[in-house]
Length: 530
Image 1 (tube, one colour):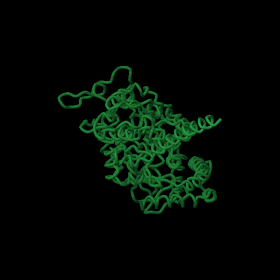
Image 2 (cartoon, helix red, strand yellow; image 1 turned 180 degrees about the vertical axis):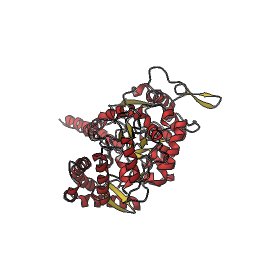
Image 3 (tube, helix red, strand yellow; image 1 turned 30 degrees about the horizontal axis):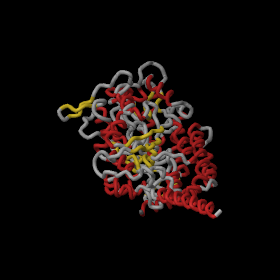
Image 4 (tube, helix red, strand yellow; image 1 turned 120 degrees about the vertical axis):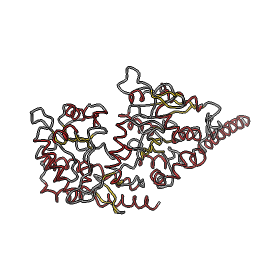
Protein backbone atom coordinates (compact mmCIF):
# COMPACT_ATOMS: atom_id res chain seq x y z
CA UNK A 1 0.00 0.00 0.00
CA UNK A 2 2.74 2.40 1.05
CA UNK A 3 4.71 1.47 -2.11
CA UNK A 4 1.66 2.22 -4.24
CA UNK A 5 1.23 5.64 -2.67
CA UNK A 6 4.91 6.42 -3.24
CA UNK A 7 4.63 5.40 -6.91
CA UNK A 8 1.50 7.53 -7.32
CA UNK A 9 3.18 10.55 -5.74
CA UNK A 10 6.24 10.04 -7.93
CA UNK A 11 4.07 9.92 -11.05
CA UNK A 12 2.16 13.05 -10.04
CA UNK A 13 5.43 14.85 -9.34
CA UNK A 14 6.67 13.94 -12.81
CA UNK A 15 3.46 15.23 -14.39
CA UNK A 16 3.64 18.52 -12.50
CA UNK A 17 7.33 18.89 -13.34
CA UNK A 18 6.64 18.36 -17.05
CA UNK A 19 3.72 20.78 -16.93
CA UNK A 20 5.84 23.38 -15.19
CA UNK A 21 8.60 22.98 -17.77
CA UNK A 22 6.06 23.30 -20.59
CA UNK A 23 4.56 26.38 -18.97
CA UNK A 24 7.98 27.98 -18.54
CA UNK A 25 8.84 27.33 -22.16
CA UNK A 26 5.51 28.68 -23.40
CA UNK A 27 5.81 31.82 -21.32
CA UNK A 28 9.31 32.50 -22.60
CA UNK A 29 8.45 31.69 -26.21
CA UNK A 30 10.62 28.57 -26.20
CA UNK A 31 9.89 25.13 -27.63
CA UNK A 32 11.73 21.95 -28.40
CA UNK A 33 13.27 23.53 -31.49
CA UNK A 34 13.71 27.01 -30.06
CA UNK A 35 17.29 26.54 -28.91
CA UNK A 36 18.70 27.02 -32.41
CA UNK A 37 21.31 29.75 -32.39
CA UNK A 38 20.56 32.70 -34.66
CA UNK A 39 23.37 34.32 -36.63
CA UNK A 40 23.02 38.08 -36.28
CA UNK A 41 24.58 38.99 -39.63
CA UNK A 42 24.55 37.61 -43.15
CA UNK A 43 23.39 34.20 -44.25
CA UNK A 44 22.47 31.60 -43.27
CA UNK A 45 20.29 32.91 -40.48
CA UNK A 46 20.62 29.60 -38.65
CA UNK A 47 23.28 26.91 -39.05
CA UNK A 48 20.85 24.14 -38.17
CA UNK A 49 17.81 24.04 -40.48
CA UNK A 50 14.49 24.92 -38.86
CA UNK A 51 10.93 24.70 -40.13
CA UNK A 52 8.22 27.33 -39.66
CA UNK A 53 4.63 27.64 -40.85
CA UNK A 54 3.29 30.64 -42.75
CA UNK A 55 -0.27 31.71 -43.53
CA UNK A 56 -0.64 34.17 -46.40
CA UNK A 57 -3.21 35.17 -49.04
CA UNK A 58 -2.67 33.45 -52.37
CA UNK A 59 -3.23 35.15 -55.72
CA UNK A 60 -3.72 31.86 -57.57
CA UNK A 61 -0.85 32.30 -60.01
CA UNK A 62 1.52 29.77 -58.43
CA UNK A 63 1.95 27.64 -55.34
CA UNK A 64 4.26 29.37 -52.90
CA UNK A 65 6.46 26.33 -52.34
CA UNK A 66 7.20 26.42 -56.10
CA UNK A 67 8.17 30.10 -56.23
CA UNK A 68 11.82 30.51 -57.18
CA UNK A 69 12.33 33.47 -54.85
CA UNK A 70 11.12 31.59 -51.79
CA UNK A 71 13.03 28.43 -52.71
CA UNK A 72 16.23 30.44 -53.10
CA UNK A 73 15.62 32.32 -49.87
CA UNK A 74 15.09 29.06 -48.03
CA UNK A 75 18.53 27.94 -49.20
CA UNK A 76 20.06 31.29 -48.21
CA UNK A 77 18.55 31.35 -44.72
CA UNK A 78 18.40 27.65 -43.83
CA UNK A 79 14.76 28.22 -42.85
CA UNK A 80 12.18 25.98 -44.48
CA UNK A 81 8.65 27.34 -44.64
CA UNK A 82 5.40 25.41 -44.84
CA UNK A 83 2.86 27.63 -46.61
CA UNK A 84 -0.90 27.80 -46.19
CA UNK A 85 -2.27 30.20 -48.81
CA UNK A 86 -6.07 30.41 -49.03
CA UNK A 87 -7.36 32.57 -51.90
CA UNK A 88 -7.13 36.31 -51.37
CA UNK A 89 -10.92 36.59 -51.68
CA UNK A 90 -11.40 34.13 -48.81
CA UNK A 91 -8.36 34.97 -46.72
CA UNK A 92 -9.98 37.00 -43.96
CA UNK A 93 -12.51 34.24 -43.27
CA UNK A 94 -9.75 31.62 -43.09
CA UNK A 95 -7.61 33.85 -40.88
CA UNK A 96 -10.50 34.45 -38.48
CA UNK A 97 -11.14 30.69 -38.30
CA UNK A 98 -7.47 30.06 -37.55
CA UNK A 99 -7.52 32.55 -34.69
CA UNK A 100 -10.80 31.19 -33.34
CA UNK A 101 -9.60 27.58 -33.39
CA UNK A 102 -6.20 28.36 -31.92
CA UNK A 103 -4.60 26.58 -34.88
CA UNK A 104 -2.74 29.61 -36.18
CA UNK A 105 0.51 29.55 -38.17
CA UNK A 106 3.87 30.67 -36.79
CA UNK A 107 3.88 33.66 -39.15
CA UNK A 108 1.07 35.69 -40.76
CA UNK A 109 2.40 37.17 -43.99
CA UNK A 110 0.96 39.71 -46.43
CA UNK A 111 -2.43 40.00 -44.75
CA UNK A 112 -2.62 43.79 -44.76
CA UNK A 113 -4.86 45.92 -42.60
CA UNK A 114 -8.01 44.87 -44.48
CA UNK A 115 -7.54 41.29 -43.24
CA UNK A 116 -5.44 41.62 -40.09
CA UNK A 117 -7.25 44.75 -38.95
CA UNK A 118 -5.96 47.21 -36.35
CA UNK A 119 -8.70 45.98 -34.00
CA UNK A 120 -7.49 42.39 -34.45
CA UNK A 121 -3.92 43.46 -33.74
CA UNK A 122 -4.99 45.03 -30.46
CA UNK A 123 -7.28 42.15 -29.49
CA UNK A 124 -4.94 39.26 -30.29
CA UNK A 125 -1.94 41.21 -29.05
CA UNK A 126 -3.56 41.72 -25.65
CA UNK A 127 -4.49 38.01 -25.59
CA UNK A 128 -0.88 37.05 -26.25
CA UNK A 129 -1.65 35.37 -29.58
CA UNK A 130 0.41 37.95 -31.49
CA UNK A 131 3.89 38.57 -30.10
CA UNK A 132 5.14 42.11 -29.48
CA UNK A 133 7.92 42.80 -31.96
CA UNK A 134 9.68 45.89 -30.64
CA UNK A 135 12.33 44.04 -28.58
CA UNK A 136 12.94 41.59 -31.41
CA UNK A 137 13.40 44.55 -33.77
CA UNK A 138 15.82 46.23 -31.38
CA UNK A 139 17.98 43.13 -31.03
CA UNK A 140 17.70 41.28 -34.34
CA UNK A 141 16.34 43.53 -37.13
CA UNK A 142 18.75 46.36 -38.03
CA UNK A 143 16.96 47.32 -41.27
CA UNK A 144 13.57 47.64 -39.61
CA UNK A 145 15.11 49.45 -36.64
CA UNK A 146 16.76 51.97 -38.96
CA UNK A 147 13.51 52.52 -40.87
CA UNK A 148 11.58 53.27 -37.68
CA UNK A 149 14.29 55.57 -36.31
CA UNK A 150 14.41 57.57 -39.55
CA UNK A 151 10.61 57.67 -39.95
CA UNK A 152 8.92 58.39 -36.60
CA UNK A 153 5.49 58.64 -38.27
CA UNK A 154 5.81 55.03 -39.39
CA UNK A 155 6.66 53.95 -35.86
CA UNK A 156 3.70 55.93 -34.47
CA UNK A 157 1.41 54.37 -37.04
CA UNK A 158 2.28 50.76 -36.16
CA UNK A 159 2.53 51.13 -32.37
CA UNK A 160 -0.64 50.25 -30.46
CA UNK A 161 -1.91 52.09 -27.41
CA UNK A 162 -0.19 49.64 -25.05
CA UNK A 163 3.15 50.60 -26.62
CA UNK A 164 3.65 47.38 -28.57
CA UNK A 165 4.18 46.65 -32.26
CA UNK A 166 2.23 43.55 -33.25
CA UNK A 167 2.64 43.77 -37.02
CA UNK A 168 5.10 45.14 -39.54
CA UNK A 169 3.94 47.28 -42.47
CA UNK A 170 4.47 47.38 -46.17
CA UNK A 171 5.99 50.77 -46.95
CA UNK A 172 5.44 52.03 -50.49
CA UNK A 173 7.66 54.57 -52.20
CA UNK A 174 7.62 55.91 -55.74
CA UNK A 175 5.03 57.87 -57.68
CA UNK A 176 2.01 55.59 -57.41
CA UNK A 177 2.50 55.27 -53.64
CA UNK A 178 1.15 58.83 -53.35
CA UNK A 179 -2.14 57.94 -55.03
CA UNK A 180 -5.08 57.72 -52.68
CA UNK A 181 -7.07 55.98 -55.40
CA UNK A 182 -6.45 55.21 -59.03
CA UNK A 183 -6.33 58.62 -60.76
CA UNK A 184 -8.75 60.03 -63.27
CA UNK A 185 -7.42 59.93 -66.84
CA UNK A 186 -8.49 62.01 -69.81
CA UNK A 187 -8.98 60.46 -73.22
CA UNK A 188 -6.15 62.12 -75.13
CA UNK A 189 -7.69 61.35 -78.51
CA UNK A 190 -10.78 63.31 -77.55
CA UNK A 191 -8.74 66.24 -76.25
CA UNK A 192 -6.87 66.34 -79.56
CA UNK A 193 -10.08 66.10 -81.57
CA UNK A 194 -11.57 69.08 -79.73
CA UNK A 195 -8.34 71.09 -79.72
CA UNK A 196 -8.17 71.21 -75.91
CA UNK A 197 -4.76 72.59 -74.95
CA UNK A 198 -5.25 73.17 -71.22
CA UNK A 199 -7.01 70.85 -68.79
CA UNK A 200 -9.82 72.24 -66.63
CA UNK A 201 -8.78 73.53 -63.21
CA UNK A 202 -12.19 74.45 -61.78
CA UNK A 203 -15.48 72.60 -61.49
CA UNK A 204 -17.03 75.08 -63.92
CA UNK A 205 -14.34 74.45 -66.54
CA UNK A 206 -14.68 70.71 -65.99
CA UNK A 207 -18.44 70.90 -66.57
CA UNK A 208 -17.93 72.86 -69.78
CA UNK A 209 -15.52 70.24 -71.12
CA UNK A 210 -17.91 67.42 -70.21
CA UNK A 211 -20.62 69.15 -72.24
CA UNK A 212 -18.26 69.33 -75.22
CA UNK A 213 -17.39 65.65 -74.81
CA UNK A 214 -21.09 64.80 -74.97
CA UNK A 215 -22.17 67.07 -77.82
CA UNK A 216 -19.22 67.43 -80.24
CA UNK A 217 -18.65 63.78 -81.27
CA UNK A 218 -15.00 63.59 -80.14
CA UNK A 219 -14.72 59.88 -81.01
CA UNK A 220 -15.68 60.77 -84.57
CA UNK A 221 -18.08 57.91 -85.27
CA UNK A 222 -21.05 60.12 -86.06
CA UNK A 223 -23.08 58.69 -83.18
CA UNK A 224 -24.12 60.32 -79.92
CA UNK A 225 -22.59 57.49 -77.87
CA UNK A 226 -20.00 59.43 -75.89
CA UNK A 227 -19.90 59.06 -72.09
CA UNK A 228 -18.07 62.08 -70.67
CA UNK A 229 -17.47 60.64 -67.17
CA UNK A 230 -18.08 57.29 -65.49
CA UNK A 231 -17.13 55.15 -62.52
CA UNK A 232 -18.28 52.06 -60.67
CA UNK A 233 -20.35 53.29 -57.70
CA UNK A 234 -18.09 56.37 -57.47
CA UNK A 235 -15.55 54.18 -55.68
CA UNK A 236 -12.50 55.67 -57.40
CA UNK A 237 -13.48 59.12 -58.65
CA UNK A 238 -15.29 60.19 -55.46
CA UNK A 239 -12.06 61.14 -53.67
CA UNK A 240 -10.98 63.49 -56.44
CA UNK A 241 -14.34 65.27 -56.66
CA UNK A 242 -14.65 65.58 -52.88
CA UNK A 243 -11.28 67.33 -52.94
CA UNK A 244 -12.64 69.90 -55.37
CA UNK A 245 -15.13 70.87 -52.66
CA UNK A 246 -12.57 71.04 -49.87
CA UNK A 247 -12.71 67.50 -48.46
CA UNK A 248 -9.97 64.89 -48.24
CA UNK A 249 -12.06 61.89 -47.21
CA UNK A 250 -15.53 60.42 -47.45
CA UNK A 251 -15.90 60.09 -43.70
CA UNK A 252 -13.48 61.03 -40.93
CA UNK A 253 -10.81 63.58 -41.76
CA UNK A 254 -8.54 65.92 -39.83
CA UNK A 255 -7.89 69.59 -40.51
CA UNK A 256 -5.49 71.58 -38.32
CA UNK A 257 -5.99 69.14 -35.46
CA UNK A 258 -9.79 69.15 -35.66
CA UNK A 259 -11.62 65.97 -36.67
CA UNK A 260 -14.87 66.10 -38.63
CA UNK A 261 -17.27 63.79 -40.44
CA UNK A 262 -17.50 65.15 -43.98
CA UNK A 263 -20.83 63.61 -45.18
CA UNK A 264 -22.77 66.04 -42.96
CA UNK A 265 -20.90 69.20 -44.02
CA UNK A 266 -22.09 71.95 -46.35
CA UNK A 267 -19.11 71.09 -48.57
CA UNK A 268 -20.50 67.59 -49.04
CA UNK A 269 -23.90 68.98 -49.97
CA UNK A 270 -22.20 71.07 -52.67
CA UNK A 271 -20.43 67.94 -53.95
CA UNK A 272 -23.75 66.09 -54.18
CA UNK A 273 -25.38 69.05 -55.93
CA UNK A 274 -22.60 69.14 -58.53
CA UNK A 275 -22.61 65.39 -59.16
CA UNK A 276 -26.41 65.42 -59.42
CA UNK A 277 -26.11 68.09 -62.12
CA UNK A 278 -23.66 65.93 -64.06
CA UNK A 279 -25.95 62.93 -63.68
CA UNK A 280 -29.15 64.74 -64.69
CA UNK A 281 -27.46 66.00 -67.87
CA UNK A 282 -26.03 62.52 -68.57
CA UNK A 283 -22.49 63.82 -68.30
CA UNK A 284 -22.01 61.19 -65.60
CA UNK A 285 -22.81 57.72 -66.91
CA UNK A 286 -26.38 56.72 -65.89
CA UNK A 287 -25.02 53.21 -65.18
CA UNK A 288 -22.43 54.45 -62.67
CA UNK A 289 -24.18 52.86 -59.68
CA UNK A 290 -25.12 49.60 -61.41
CA UNK A 291 -22.29 48.58 -63.71
CA UNK A 292 -19.34 46.29 -63.08
CA UNK A 293 -15.69 47.06 -63.65
CA UNK A 294 -15.74 44.78 -66.69
CA UNK A 295 -18.61 46.78 -68.20
CA UNK A 296 -16.72 50.00 -67.55
CA UNK A 297 -13.66 48.66 -69.36
CA UNK A 298 -15.73 47.47 -72.30
CA UNK A 299 -16.93 51.04 -72.82
CA UNK A 300 -13.36 52.27 -72.61
CA UNK A 301 -12.18 49.81 -75.24
CA UNK A 302 -14.95 51.07 -77.54
CA UNK A 303 -13.53 54.62 -77.23
CA UNK A 304 -16.70 55.91 -75.58
CA UNK A 305 -15.16 57.48 -72.45
CA UNK A 306 -13.91 61.03 -71.93
CA UNK A 307 -12.54 60.78 -68.40
CA UNK A 308 -12.39 57.68 -66.23
CA UNK A 309 -10.61 56.27 -63.18
CA UNK A 310 -8.13 53.40 -63.20
CA UNK A 311 -4.64 52.65 -61.96
CA UNK A 312 -3.30 53.29 -65.45
CA UNK A 313 -5.43 54.49 -68.35
CA UNK A 314 -4.59 51.53 -70.57
CA UNK A 315 -6.19 49.18 -68.03
CA UNK A 316 -9.51 50.65 -69.18
CA UNK A 317 -8.82 51.52 -72.81
CA UNK A 318 -6.84 48.44 -73.79
CA UNK A 319 -4.19 50.63 -75.41
CA UNK A 320 -0.45 50.08 -75.24
CA UNK A 321 1.75 51.95 -72.77
CA UNK A 322 3.04 54.03 -75.66
CA UNK A 323 -0.48 55.04 -76.70
CA UNK A 324 -1.36 55.79 -73.06
CA UNK A 325 1.28 58.53 -73.00
CA UNK A 326 -1.33 60.68 -74.74
CA UNK A 327 -3.85 60.31 -71.88
CA UNK A 328 -3.08 62.96 -69.25
CA UNK A 329 -3.87 62.59 -65.57
CA UNK A 330 -6.64 64.86 -64.29
CA UNK A 331 -5.79 68.31 -62.98
CA UNK A 332 -7.02 68.78 -59.37
CA UNK A 333 -10.05 71.05 -59.35
CA UNK A 334 -11.18 73.96 -57.23
CA UNK A 335 -14.75 75.15 -56.76
CA UNK A 336 -16.63 78.22 -55.52
CA UNK A 337 -16.64 76.72 -51.99
CA UNK A 338 -12.97 75.68 -52.04
CA UNK A 339 -10.51 77.87 -53.88
CA UNK A 340 -7.44 76.08 -52.49
CA UNK A 341 -6.17 73.05 -54.39
CA UNK A 342 -6.06 70.00 -52.15
CA UNK A 343 -5.85 66.31 -52.90
CA UNK A 344 -5.92 63.27 -50.60
CA UNK A 345 -2.53 61.63 -50.20
CA UNK A 346 -1.85 57.99 -49.46
CA UNK A 347 0.36 57.63 -46.35
CA UNK A 348 2.20 54.78 -48.07
CA UNK A 349 1.85 52.51 -45.03
CA UNK A 350 -0.12 49.25 -45.04
CA UNK A 351 -0.19 47.68 -41.61
CA UNK A 352 -0.64 43.98 -40.91
CA UNK A 353 1.96 42.79 -43.44
CA UNK A 354 3.89 40.51 -41.05
CA UNK A 355 3.13 39.15 -37.59
CA UNK A 356 4.66 36.48 -35.39
CA UNK A 357 2.30 34.37 -33.31
CA UNK A 358 2.77 32.75 -29.93
CA UNK A 359 2.93 29.37 -31.71
CA UNK A 360 6.26 30.37 -33.28
CA UNK A 361 9.19 28.44 -31.76
CA UNK A 362 11.80 30.76 -33.28
CA UNK A 363 10.70 34.41 -33.22
CA UNK A 364 14.32 35.65 -33.37
CA UNK A 365 14.98 33.75 -36.59
CA UNK A 366 11.60 34.88 -37.96
CA UNK A 367 12.30 38.58 -37.46
CA UNK A 368 15.73 38.17 -39.05
CA UNK A 369 14.06 36.34 -41.96
CA UNK A 370 11.81 39.31 -42.74
CA UNK A 371 14.32 42.04 -41.87
CA UNK A 372 16.28 41.46 -45.08
CA UNK A 373 13.30 42.57 -47.15
CA UNK A 374 13.43 46.03 -45.54
CA UNK A 375 16.80 46.68 -47.19
CA UNK A 376 17.15 47.85 -50.80
CA UNK A 377 18.97 44.66 -51.71
CA UNK A 378 16.31 42.57 -50.01
CA UNK A 379 13.44 44.38 -51.71
CA UNK A 380 15.08 43.94 -55.11
CA UNK A 381 15.48 40.22 -54.45
CA UNK A 382 11.91 39.88 -53.19
CA UNK A 383 10.48 41.86 -56.09
CA UNK A 384 12.46 40.42 -58.99
CA UNK A 385 13.71 37.08 -57.71
CA UNK A 386 17.04 35.35 -58.25
CA UNK A 387 19.11 35.74 -61.38
CA UNK A 388 18.12 33.87 -64.50
CA UNK A 389 14.36 34.39 -64.49
CA UNK A 390 13.42 38.06 -64.89
CA UNK A 391 16.98 39.31 -65.23
CA UNK A 392 20.62 38.35 -65.58
CA UNK A 393 23.90 40.03 -64.81
CA UNK A 394 25.94 41.09 -67.83
CA UNK A 395 29.26 42.67 -66.89
CA UNK A 396 27.83 44.09 -63.68
CA UNK A 397 24.68 45.43 -65.31
CA UNK A 398 21.20 44.01 -64.70
CA UNK A 399 19.70 43.07 -68.05
CA UNK A 400 16.03 42.11 -68.24
CA UNK A 401 14.99 38.95 -70.05
CA UNK A 402 12.06 38.27 -72.35
CA UNK A 403 8.90 36.88 -70.79
CA UNK A 404 8.51 33.15 -71.45
CA UNK A 405 5.59 31.88 -73.51
CA UNK A 406 2.43 31.09 -71.60
CA UNK A 407 2.26 34.37 -69.68
CA UNK A 408 0.18 37.39 -70.69
CA UNK A 409 2.75 39.86 -69.35
CA UNK A 410 6.00 40.15 -67.45
CA UNK A 411 3.92 40.98 -64.36
CA UNK A 412 2.02 37.69 -64.62
CA UNK A 413 5.33 35.88 -64.92
CA UNK A 414 6.73 37.79 -61.93
CA UNK A 415 3.70 36.70 -59.92
CA UNK A 416 4.74 33.08 -60.43
CA UNK A 417 8.23 33.79 -59.09
CA UNK A 418 7.67 35.92 -55.99
CA UNK A 419 5.01 36.50 -53.31
CA UNK A 420 5.49 40.26 -53.75
CA UNK A 421 2.58 40.41 -56.17
CA UNK A 422 -0.98 41.50 -55.46
CA UNK A 423 -0.60 41.48 -51.67
CA UNK A 424 1.02 43.84 -49.13
CA UNK A 425 4.29 41.97 -48.71
CA UNK A 426 6.44 43.20 -45.79
CA UNK A 427 9.09 45.37 -47.41
CA UNK A 428 9.95 48.91 -48.45
CA UNK A 429 8.88 48.93 -52.08
CA UNK A 430 9.72 51.44 -54.75
CA UNK A 431 11.78 51.88 -57.89
CA UNK A 432 14.50 49.25 -58.32
CA UNK A 433 17.89 50.88 -57.81
CA UNK A 434 19.78 51.06 -61.10
CA UNK A 435 16.83 49.87 -63.19
CA UNK A 436 16.21 52.24 -66.11
CA UNK A 437 12.72 53.69 -66.23
CA UNK A 438 10.53 53.26 -69.25
CA UNK A 439 9.06 56.26 -71.03
CA UNK A 440 5.71 55.43 -69.46
CA UNK A 441 7.21 55.32 -65.96
CA UNK A 442 8.80 58.71 -66.58
CA UNK A 443 5.39 59.98 -67.69
CA UNK A 444 3.76 58.71 -64.48
CA UNK A 445 6.48 60.36 -62.39
CA UNK A 446 5.99 63.67 -64.18
CA UNK A 447 2.19 63.67 -63.92
CA UNK A 448 2.28 62.70 -60.23
CA UNK A 449 4.91 65.25 -59.29
CA UNK A 450 3.00 68.00 -61.06
CA UNK A 451 -0.59 67.20 -60.09
CA UNK A 452 -0.62 65.28 -56.81
CA UNK A 453 2.53 65.70 -54.73
CA UNK A 454 2.39 69.52 -54.38
CA UNK A 455 -1.19 69.46 -53.11
CA UNK A 456 -1.41 66.17 -51.25
CA UNK A 457 -2.51 65.83 -47.62
CA UNK A 458 -3.10 62.60 -45.69
CA UNK A 459 -6.79 62.77 -44.66
CA UNK A 460 -6.36 61.03 -41.30
CA UNK A 461 -3.38 59.26 -39.75
CA UNK A 462 -3.25 55.55 -39.07
CA UNK A 463 -4.38 55.24 -35.46
CA UNK A 464 -5.29 52.51 -33.01
CA UNK A 465 -8.37 52.51 -30.81
CA UNK A 466 -8.80 51.11 -27.33
CA UNK A 467 -11.00 48.03 -26.97
CA UNK A 468 -13.78 50.20 -25.53
CA UNK A 469 -13.45 52.75 -28.33
CA UNK A 470 -13.57 49.97 -30.90
CA UNK A 471 -16.84 48.72 -29.40
CA UNK A 472 -18.27 52.23 -29.67
CA UNK A 473 -17.21 52.52 -33.31
CA UNK A 474 -18.51 49.05 -34.19
CA UNK A 475 -21.92 49.89 -32.74
CA UNK A 476 -22.19 52.94 -34.99
CA UNK A 477 -20.18 52.33 -38.13
CA UNK A 478 -22.00 49.57 -40.00
CA UNK A 479 -25.39 51.29 -40.10
CA UNK A 480 -23.80 54.71 -40.61
CA UNK A 481 -21.69 53.63 -43.58
CA UNK A 482 -24.57 51.77 -45.20
CA UNK A 483 -26.90 54.76 -44.85
CA UNK A 484 -24.40 57.27 -46.23
CA UNK A 485 -23.60 54.99 -49.20
CA UNK A 486 -27.28 54.58 -50.05
CA UNK A 487 -28.03 58.26 -49.71
CA UNK A 488 -25.09 59.33 -51.86
CA UNK A 489 -26.44 57.24 -54.73
CA UNK A 490 -29.98 58.52 -54.16
CA UNK A 491 -28.95 62.19 -54.00
CA UNK A 492 -26.74 61.97 -57.10
CA UNK A 493 -29.33 60.12 -59.18
CA UNK A 494 -32.18 62.34 -57.96
CA UNK A 495 -34.13 59.51 -56.36
CA UNK A 496 -33.85 61.55 -53.16
CA UNK A 497 -34.14 65.32 -53.72
CA UNK A 498 -31.51 67.49 -52.10
CA UNK A 499 -34.35 69.42 -50.49
CA UNK A 500 -34.31 66.52 -47.98
CA UNK A 501 -30.74 67.33 -46.91
CA UNK A 502 -31.70 68.48 -43.41
CA UNK A 503 -33.59 65.26 -42.78
CA UNK A 504 -30.55 63.28 -43.95
CA UNK A 505 -28.25 65.17 -41.56
CA UNK A 506 -30.68 64.70 -38.68
CA UNK A 507 -30.76 60.95 -39.32
CA UNK A 508 -26.97 60.80 -39.13
CA UNK A 509 -26.95 62.86 -35.94
CA UNK A 510 -29.36 60.34 -34.41
CA UNK A 511 -26.83 57.61 -35.22
CA UNK A 512 -24.51 59.03 -32.53
CA UNK A 513 -22.24 60.78 -35.01
CA UNK A 514 -20.95 63.12 -32.28
CA UNK A 515 -19.69 60.12 -30.31
CA UNK A 516 -18.16 58.70 -33.49
CA UNK A 517 -16.23 61.92 -34.11
CA UNK A 518 -15.17 62.23 -30.45
CA UNK A 519 -13.60 58.77 -30.49
CA UNK A 520 -11.59 59.62 -33.58
CA UNK A 521 -10.61 62.99 -32.12
CA UNK A 522 -9.24 61.24 -29.02
CA UNK A 523 -7.37 58.74 -31.19
CA UNK A 524 -5.91 61.54 -33.30
CA UNK A 525 -4.83 63.47 -30.21
CA UNK A 526 -3.01 60.41 -28.85
CA UNK A 527 -1.29 59.86 -32.18
CA UNK A 528 -0.30 63.51 -32.49
CA UNK A 529 1.14 63.64 -28.98
CA UNK A 530 3.02 60.33 -29.17
